[in-house]
Image (cartoon, rainbow, N blue to C red; front, side, top):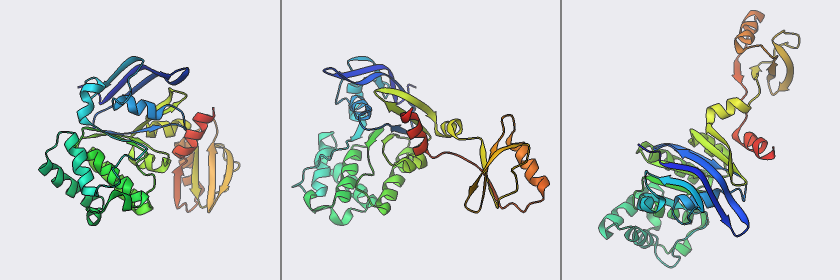
Length: 295
């Protein structure tokens, strides 16, 4: 079976501005995939090509085993800009969008009711869209994206405008979609949320993928060879330790070149200290993002 998304050498320019430059990307079916990059990196252009709103100038782009055009009925796309009809009631708006996708009115009404309940909007079903707050409009837009039950769901900034409670509602919804076997692509500035959701990711910069792979492997690649130890041991002269930094309640021990975690753990055990916590230092995704883009 082909992956959910396969891009090889995809190029897209607008006049003299190159937005996507030889993009190579692979998203497997059923995974939650993070797509990151600074403003103007080519993220939205890429997502719009996958959703068949733009056509590549050249290169190969396959979506759900077909061309983006043929796959379009099976793709749900949440754009960063909202596109609901402000004068329609929320339920009426969702049913209308579903009917545009070929869903019968009866089925659309049932699906809309379930999604509104799932997203905590059931009590606003008859309210005009214009009366909803920014966050509630965002949740209604998410519901509209899912009305035709797409196999591939593309979320461009799904968490914008949401308070912490509703961020968690949407985060769990995304996990549920993957649990149902759907593929989800998440483009978001909230790095901690991407970390909590995505097993794999790609970073794009100036139209090219500059980093991609399993999140755990990426974090291991960029994190220092160091351990946080609580409480702080007197480790400045241990042969396994190159340097020591103070942290709240303990020390961060940086291993010397050639030393291993096993060497450090044996040293800690031999020291006779009452150690309460030992944890490998892993850089947060935000730090990795800044390092990659900054370089």
